[in-house]
Image: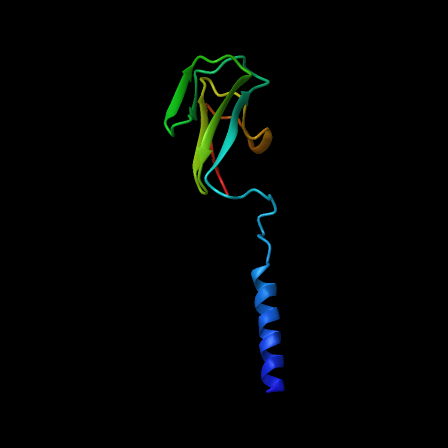
Length: 126
């Protein structure tokens, strides 16, 4: 009987220890859906304007801005789910050096420099 009680106590302690495991997200706020501020930023050292910029809006559709002046910045507030994808792209002719950036809650989460006449990048919420 003493062995049974000891085994049961050890099993109970192991169960409690396993149930107290922390999430490995590291962010402290990884629950979805969540509301975020998304900032799209497009800049260039070689041109002052582009033919167009396309980005995802609050409702999941795409917006195209024709002949935008650089530096272009647009901030939206959107409720996102885990694995939602947002995109940002541009078109210019002739090819120029263009930098695309996506910021989530004022933190740069993706940044890329392109030297082609058109390009796009995406960001997936983790």
